[in-house]
Amino acid sequence: MSLHIVDGRTVVAQRRGPLARIGRFLAEPFKDAWHHRDLLLAILQRELAERFKGSVAGWVWAVTAPLLSLIVYTVAFSGAVRLPSGEVSGSNFDYALFIFGGLIAFNFFSEMAYRAPSLLHEYAHFIKQTMFPAEMLPIISTLRATAYASIGLVLMLVAQLVLTGTLHWTVLLLPIWYIPFIAFLIGMTWTLSAMGAFTRDTAYLMMTVAPLLMFATPVFYSTDQMSETLKLVFYINILTGFIEVLRDIVVFGQLPNPLVCAWVLFLSVATFYFGFWFFGKQRDGIADVI
Image (cartoon, rainbow, N blue to C red):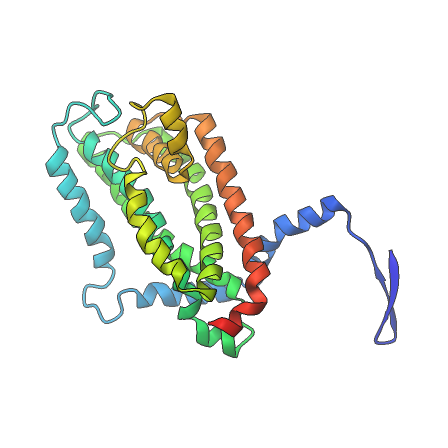
């Protein structure tokens, strides 16, 4: 504890212990988001409104794209007796839902991976001219992507009910998929947007890596037929866990593997707080370079 004189007043400054500093750091992103909640909501509404600005059909397009994909996969894979995992199909449409679930998760990720490096440049005029909280932009951008991913997910649930006549009770566990995924994407976007502010190479890197990553992610196949060693390699890719959890909850109606859930949660939390820390370290220089 120390005493300081500020504007003629005596101020007592207390030194925080390690646990207090850790607790403050863990709570800080949530306190910041709550403090700027009105700004978050206003910009999010603006982003959602501008997505289809000038379009006659508007939000119909947000439903049309995933719906057409679902129809194509349903026609192409209906009647398949076995899934890529080797399991016997419970219905003629499980194969289509199996792939569609993988695409929902991967497209959720790829939308952020492509946009994140240039995100701060999109709002350069705000960041340079006002005391704009730039750290809120990755949160807003991720929430916008969440809205479109949710449309695809709702279509998947409707298709599961209509095509198979069953909606498993495990869909009630979807928050254990949603919340860590959103946290992971926010953390990733904090990191990539801060890097992208200083170099355009980040955008080119993601445009190169993201399409290749699709083939290293079990979107069209399953890890169940792999050896244990190869399966562990695939689990390094966090998207593998997210896709498996989604399929277990929606398509198979079974509880996800607890170890997979724990691993995904760990990586999500680590990515979230690393991204927040990394963005904070670069915050002061961002306005000078964009």
